[in-house]
Length: 386
Ligand SMILES: C[S@@+](CC[C@H](N)C(=O)[O-])C[C@H]1O[C@@H](n2cnc3c(N)ncnc32)[C@H](O)[C@@H]1O
Image (cartoon, rainbow, N blue to C red; front, top):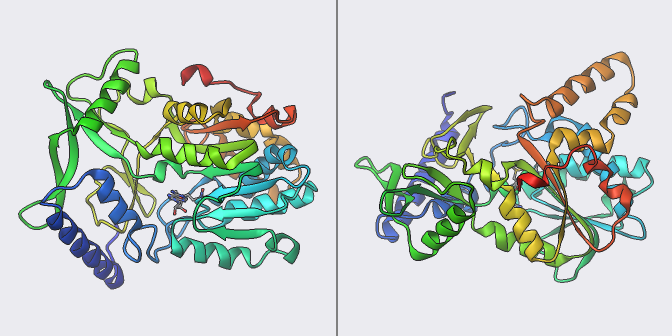
């Protein structure tokens, strides 16, 4: 791992001090989702809430909209049929603002601009970065943007978008034992550093794991470690409640439940990202690295259906981009250099060994939506895997 500079080392010490105080105040042990709340989102301290670059080449990881404006252009083609008659967009967790920028620019060319473009971002630092970037847009586009502190109290018609947000919600960790389930939480070692510490699962987690195990083709076996994102249900219910008519597009890395909790995946999917290196130690430099787990798309779909949405499409990111017309977008590129650059970006977005297969796209709708809105999901239908 690259060495830390003085400012990073000082920041890591501040996060560690807050963590020690929090764990001590809670009697020496905290759940893993509480750990994530602190090291990812505590104001001024957490990874997403402090000043590091995070996204892009100079940060720790790269997302599809950061990689290429082609992603936003394809999302624009998928959204355009849903934005007629004053439709709006609401984007969750907009990162650096890259998706909002590429999407608005392409929607303007398609003559399908939303009447308003709201961004709900939990990180004050990222919100500032988004504002700074999007302030450079033409006034006719910039005027449509506004930031929200919470979900709007009124409903909207149009599109709700989230790219790599579900994987950023705090999750809990478990291990199946011979006698039931243990919760994998966090305590301090003799040097005052965070480490895994297991306790018998509380009744709520136990019941949830029993439900999960019963829903799998073969039950969870002793030794199986994994992650469970319980807030996903309430998060989806909240988003669905805002959508009066139209669609929600969710993009993330993940799998349907049977594959995610398959007996061959007994180590779980927790991953940490620092300077484009991935590893599995969530206690390495708390506050300086991103920590995520793959999304259970079955949980997402079930929560959406329970909130009255139709699960209208589920496919790989590659199939979504092909269905949305990435070929046509590539054909629009300018000179030979630009074409070569875009072709290389398209490969990274599409290839199975890159982002094409691990990342999935899900279309959730409410009401009758234009058939053209489903075009992006016409190349592949993976809903049987949910
Ligand atoms: C992995 S980043 C993805 C950023 C961006 N969507 C992209 O694709 O480049 C996760 C983003 O979700 C935000 N976030 C996390 N939890 C959130 C929540 N409950 N509501 C809205 N945004 C959230 C983070 O602050 C961050 O902007």
